Image (tube, rainbow, N blue to C red):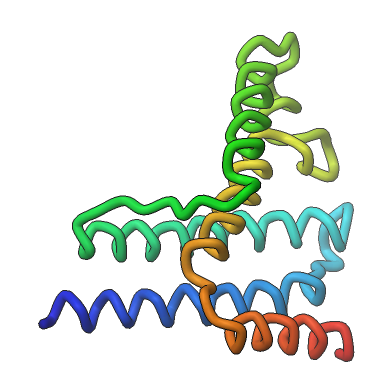
Length: 145
């Protein structure tokens, strides 16, 4: 009984976290950095992706099974990730391969992992049209702001 309540709570946290990410990511900036737009957005994305992955892991532990819902993109994404991972391991300059190039810190393995977490979070947790509609409304409101 209690396990089901926590599972529902984690589902809601994940859904609202996705909405939070979609709304705030375009609006995040930090004028005190060398690159006021991309670097803060990337850090925000890393942080939110890690936090949502934590709640997703807790939800799956409570359910007692690990589910990765399959979509037509699952296999190509895993193949791409495998190639990217191998190129990072065998790279001559591993720091940009892992974290991206300065000052953007985008395009490395860490950013790809955060994108994969977000993709699988959406595929596993967004199931209804009204949830998709809420995401589109959140994105539209962010664009309006």
